[in-house]
Image (cartoon, rainbow over all chains, first blue to last red; front, side):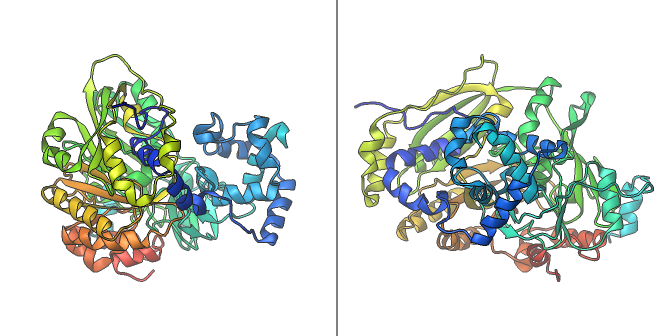
Amino acid sequence: MQSFRLWGSGNNLSSWEQCYAVYMRILVVSLLLMTAGCSREPQSIDPERLELYTEIYAGADMTPAVQEKWARSCALCHAAGVGGAPRVGVKADWQARVDKGPGMLMVNTIDGINQMPPLGYCQDCGLDDFAAMIKFMIGDAG
Amino acid sequence: MITRRRLLASSLLPFVFAGGTKAAAASATQAPWLNWSGYLRAEPAGRVAPGSTEELAAWLAETSGKVRPVGSAHSFSPLVPTKGHLLVLDRLSGLDSLLAASSEAVFHAGTRLSDTGQPLWQAGQAMFNLPDIDRQTIAGALATSTHGTGARLQSLSGYVSGLELVTASGEILVLDAGHEFLPAAAVSLGALGVITKATFRNRTPFRVRTRTWVEETTTILDKFDQYSREWQHFEMMPLLHSDYALAIAHQETEAELQPPAEPDDDSLLTLIGATPVPLRGALINSLAQTVEPTESVQRSYEALTNVRMTRFNEMEYSVPADVGADCLLEVMRAVAENAVDVVIPLEYRIIDADDTWLSMFTGSPRVSISVHRLAGEDFNPLFNLVEPIFWKYGGRPHWGKWHSLGHSELRALYPKFDDFTRLRQELDPAGRLLNPHLAKLFGVEA
């Protein structure tokens, strides 16, 4: 009988997720169907919300105070690309996301998407803070 | 009889609030608040992120209105949502001081667990045990008696030997080891005040050997006591709709570091991906027998905590250790008989007793059983199905995970619940720290 490993124990994944990987390998199709509703972007976004977020984004600037917030929240994943997070200033990581527009980038930051939790671990960030941090991370890709 | 005067007399620091309130960080445009899974949502009136205990105390003393402290938003129970102000602890972060002689360390309460391991290691200390998720703040983890696994190991709250707490009215209390109310504040749901510093009893740094393997669930249950004696940290993750579970064990070792292996990338994915769900059990049973064990050696804080990337909602109850196996099997039978289409494994851990007032493990060792649903899925059918089974076995809900219990049920589960309720009333008579969920738990008006 062929022997194979159904999960690895490294990759900084928790043992729970290693176990989860067993299912992932067995139930790819069904799991994709079940998770479709939680990992995709919402089908429709309130146009007023998008407009507000786009406006806030346009006027946002990185400041030392926002930089401090970034360092204790976004940086947890975006500095090294943990869990597939787009890395700071890496154009290839950001381009497809940038193409969705700044409003959608803001929506996904506030609501969370895929493995990124809502608010990206910044509990005291306002909308203007999120906008400034997104701009900073996108860098030249914007 | 607990009196406010008695508590304050024994713990109030002579802090002076003169000098005015230094404006805490606030944002110009408010964002909604959501928890980690995205299930809980609130529209707080504002957010305050104090940079020091004194700043927090002054702000609380000079303001009124509802407030709730928030850590890293990892709770699935509505401990945080408020229409008042959120008190964000992120700026109260880092190692404050070390007590080398007693192997203790004082951390600011907003420190994430992921930021404790390395500085402690460099200082010649390590926490005895750690929970699975490492993004939580110390304050949040203590508020909910967050735990790892180990028959001779307690929840994080069991290792607390001191706390600094700011009451709703802005008084700074220091509860040292031996203080009569430290066991109450060590698991307080953020209802007694805002925890700003925590002192932990630690040990010398250690490496752990981690071994994972797959074995029949009933076999692991039969050997659970043996495995729990042989391994300092032992847990199992039963694979629902199958006969097998993943066993995860950690043991202290002097061996050289051996990083975990990278996951295999095999083509099996494609072949089995198209298999219909009804064949799930047979497939898992078949595949489980081919799974190779894994081994690694890491520093304790690297091996015991993890970055959890898959978001979910969770229910967890802790039942007396001697009925844990029966409870687990009944949960698994209920899920199978009702054909609940859940893919995330259960989690079965053991935690030693502590003497805090509201820890799930106060008084006697318990096993915790966790059920999960992916974020975005409707968890009600699963949680509503299994929660009565937990009640049947005397289960206590994890404070940070979804449950439906209220005041009358909780009073019956905790010998010190009424004492805690009285202490809460003494410290926060106006109910400033209450939200609707906490009001339900403590049987008072929000």
